[in-house]
Image (cartoon, rainbow, N blue to C red; front, side):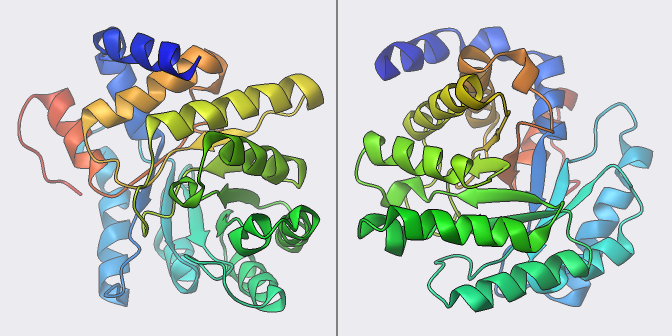
Length: 274
């Protein structure tokens, strides 16, 4: 089935290559800066670009969110002038999740208290890969409880999982424990997002939705920079989950370079706005 979906997506990718879908991808981006060298000046400049986007390109949507390290979430909230753009942070011992649960909970709780709307955390692979499935689920439940109404995105780090069965199992466990989104990768480990992992995760989302009635979002992230990549993931979501998932409430793309490439494709010229 994976091979059939992959072939269908790749054979018909031009079908999805329309201005409307390019703009849709632009509006589903979590515009991301997660660098050791991030500074207050860098964050202010980053947010300023989003604040000025509608003046520069009123015909296109703003990004869905700005995603930063947890310590910068409050600054983004303070500087951001566009109420429709969410403040997302990575927390919980990102990118490895190798710290004490109490530390994870405190970081996530503090991030929300300082203004984060969404919290991206790494699935506790140390527990999952050692067979402690309930322990892994309990960590996700505890984090979800700590952040209240904020949305929880759980990063599976699919490149570290040995096979598609583990990806599916981790996806289902994260959703059952309260994840509002499941996300492929941190972007800090290779491989990042892959179409195969995306297909497995979207199938898991569909299965969970049919079983529970709750819609969980999907976020590919990690190495996504080209227009072709973005359209591939959009096509996978459309094929498996349908158009009702093709909106920022249920589909995000984690990227830092993709926004400029989408703008170039839409405007048919070189643009380096972001």
